[in-house]
Image (cartoon, rainbow, N blue to C red; front, side, top):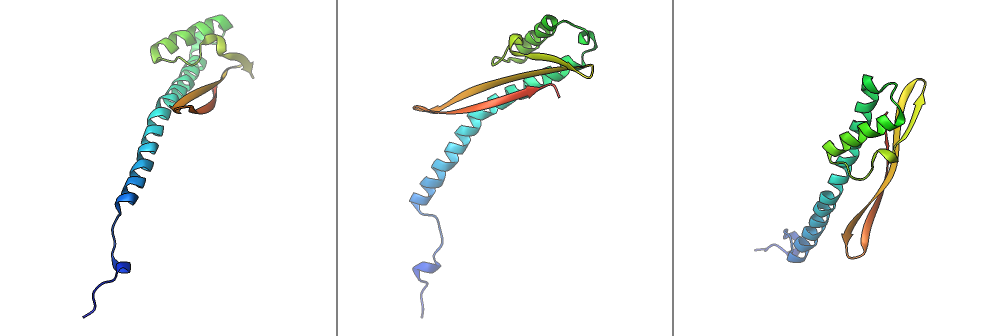
Length: 122
């Protein structure tokens, strides 16, 4: 009678389980730290689109546009930029808003992630 050899045995070792657990935890922590930053970026994009599509702001001054953004930023809990960080221009008679900014996300000890964003009203 022939019994199974070690090569036929299948399963997960404790060290393999620990290694995959650490990798999975690192991915989850990274996702938890990055998600709020990207949600804020999306909120900025939506605020820009709302301002550009607001008929009352079509002929508004740059200060009125910045004030409108500050009000929307206050409601949407946008902290990374303010109205003074927005570049306002008109292209082909259409209002264009743009803001470039960076966010540093600390991970652990002295390791951080730097993300550059380019929010536009397009």
